[in-house]
Image (cartoon, rainbow, N blue to C red; front, side, top):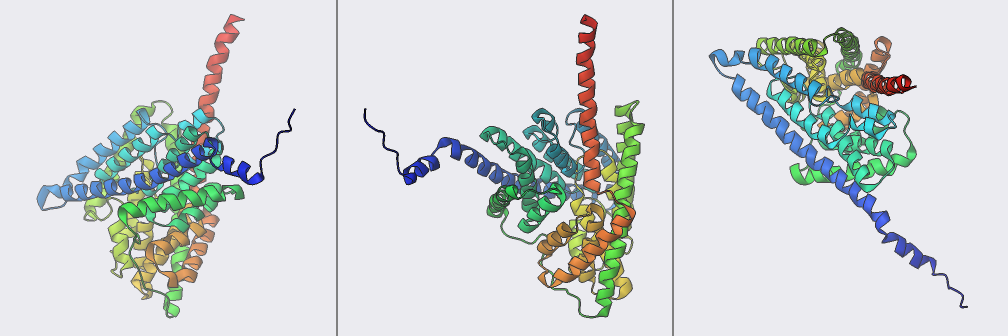
Amino acid sequence: MGVRRRQPAVFRRSRALTSARLWRPRLVFWFGALAIGATSAAFAWLADAAQHLFHSATTGPGWRQFIPLVLTPGGFVLCAWLAFRVLPGSQGSGIPQAIAARHLRDDKERQGFLSIRMAFGKIALTVAGLLCGASIGREGPTVQVGASLMLQAARLGGMAQARGLILAGSAAGIAAAFNTPLAGIVFAIEEMGRAYQARTNGLVLSAVIIAGLASLALVGNYTYFGVTGSKPTGWQDWVTVAACGVIGGGLGAAFSTLTLKITRRIRRWRTDTPQTRMILVAATAGLIVAAIGVAMGGATFGTGYDQARSAIEGHALPVWFFAGKFIASLASTLAGIPGGLFAPSLSVGAGLGSAIGELTGGDIGLAAVLGMAGYFAGVVQAPMTAFVIILEMTGGHGNVIPLMVASMLGYGTSRLFSPEPLYHALSRLFIADVLRKRRAEATQVSEPSAQKT
């Protein structure tokens, strides 16, 4: 009987490298990341087209400027009803749902928040919200879309790292939405992960790189708000840094606290007749958004991108723009329609910074950027994400230290008044819904068994 000779290690490794079991999950993962980049680019185009169509329909002499008084409440009711009846789990930003899905162990329960159906439904309803003038953004929804696509890739590729893949998809969504790869990584670590594990590094980096390449191939390289050369030059500018950080953080805490408290009260109030009261909330919120938009000449409708960019370029916004945008964004968030907070929050921050810059006599463009950092850090309580994402979106590399200071002041001030981070607090509401449904199903199963015995 002959002795079987063992193959050299190099041949064993080469066979392993060509194994279908090894390459199938990798190829599916890469395809998922490419899909996130391509979907994000398409989502951005649709969102911009929806805003342009709304603006064209509601701008002009005479009665056209009053169209939102009918269109916006009606659109809110339709979007909220579809989210409630057809696509539950799609309401709001989408980031809390992705966070909630990472805490759930059951794949069926995860699919209630992250699925292909959810991804395309989220895109459609967010675009519909922008089409009727809602003060929402597409960036938070892109996180839910990215996590959904990546989790579906995991199912197709037989990959078991669901939590890490949700994290990777979320990071890729942010990176592709803003063309900010570093911010996508920081967002995954600071906001999505909280308890970040080093073994997910490769997944997150690979997803961000591949999704970013797909987005670059489709829309090219760009800075979201253009490039600003403004930076502190005197003591007045440093007073502006401190004021934007503290005031922005306080206003961000107010937004976060109001969102959580009113959301919880609405959820309790809706218990008896959920659909009827959901429609009433959506109609009221839509009417508030419409009234503010009409009163302010349409400036508070949509994402607020144009207003924020104008302020960053040094053009002062109306002093009370930030207040109107704040209320419109709060009403849109509470309406129960799909839509994110990122872009409207940055717009509120830019308006606040512009007002502070006029008061202090500082550079308006610099004040707008600092206001964005302070307010955004106050809303989401993620200071690293705040200053990195704004740094990448404006190309203001000379403002690294001022942005850090404003973000940390905004975060610290916000924590004094609102110790509960907004996205994580909202995610617990979604988890509570899942647990309530689980208990109800368990009760229904146990009752027939008890009757038989």
